[in-house]
Length: 445
Image (tube, rainbow, N blue to C red; front, side, top):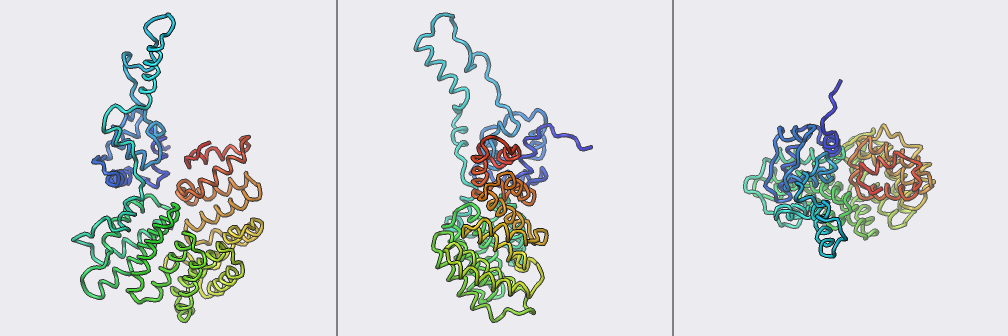
């Protein structure tokens, strides 16, 4: 039998962020401290202490890092704020039994406020300002962080970019967000052989694609556009059609998300035409990227309310899917089921929740190649059910999404907003599990 941890609140919060071991937590803690500009580290021994029955009260810089990393204040992580002594007790009774004078009332009221929230040191004041975890990524994209003098070998960069892509598809967003800025710094064009530069550029296409995806999931379309343009620049340098198509897919998404819907469609259609000649059964990688680009173009067309174009691109993607088995080639997760999944999403975008639910019945969710796609499917089903007024079933769909990928549900603004909408509809509390889900996603109940 597994022992119950002494501080289960802390352990659950750690695991919810994808940090399954204490060693992973220490690495993530130091990365977050670096992002916040705080000189604080933590050992595995200290983590064990925090997970014990008497975890103590972390000092201000450590509390700031914990709050940013685990997305909860210290009190919700099992820590107990130290009790002041009797002379400092903010709630102590006035030293007389007679009527309370105005000066005494003000004094004790201020003391009560101070005992709860007023910092006691300069360090604590500065520690309260928690930076956005993606700020360092934005700084790299805008050139505020210089290049390294000793960049890694192209092979290592390619492996790191591929790893970042896998982690995003597993919805381990917080970990990718911490490591990605350092990788992007190393992927700037460098002096060296043409072969080395080609490898670096191919890795850059993938890494900047990941960066843009991460920013889009956090509703930062302008920064995502910057990352997508960098992916496209690297792809053009390679003169490789597959790389260009891959970069065009994320550029289509970013341009559309910013609000330039028809321009987004234009990016997808133009590059799809460039690639179409290489789409054959003997080139499955090209088929996968081509099909994924068509799907992104179909989504952009639906956002532009162009139903005919959306349907045409979906049908063409369906024909491409017949050329290969369900797979994750080129990191696209493209296949027949992915086409069906996009039909669900596009029906929702066009305002037809009933059609979205009908399309959803055709999807074999177990055949979807990556966790992120499965989580997106269940989230879309939840959106459709919510639109049809079926709160309990929508909650069940979100729980299925959370099972596939906790961070997709608990951290994405669009999903947290959906949870909030469901709570508003279920004011009577008929769906108790919805409250538990909201708590895990830190949505106010």
